[in-house]
Length: 198
Image 1 (cartoon, rainbow, N blue to C red):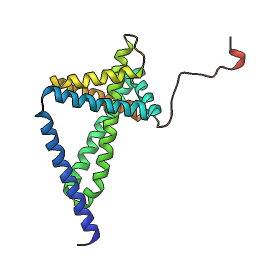
Image 2 (cartoon, rainbow, N blue to C red):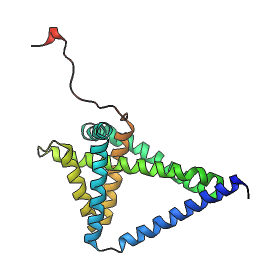
Image 3 (cartoon, rainbow, N blue to C red):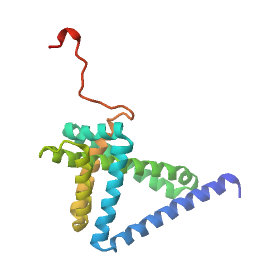
Image 4 (tube, one colour):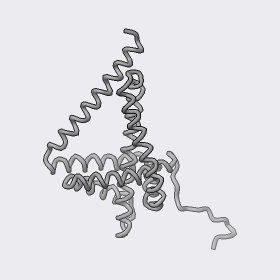
């Protein structure tokens, strides 16, 4: 067996193994008790919130602000992006199952796309929760993270509502995330010329 064939076989095996393991883990998750599922989802959401707001403050905070301040634009753009994203995932997944060489290339691409989609969904959820917190005067991104943790934990009691919230968060997050440039922090501060200062 040549090197290309061996690598292709390895890629196909990796994709198949990852798919099987992912389905088994998902099935095992739903066999857990409700409190344990709530704790797992809450902890995962908290880690994502810290990742988005804490480790990538420029990109994450700016994207969250876009969800809060431009909800209509984020929703409309996010709807289109989400459809394209889902179609890309489906096409790549199907192609990976048809050809071993394609599978070798598709596996890392799928991991990147899923990771990006997860981050954008977290941005959308935190942004929506922060928009709700703004209504009661809690104007700080930390409250958005807290709200996202609470919503994620409570969603296990009603999976259908949890799925609806996740889809809505993904749409808003995709719309805000794709419009935000990494490494750029937008603020409302403007430089006022000296002759216009009061």
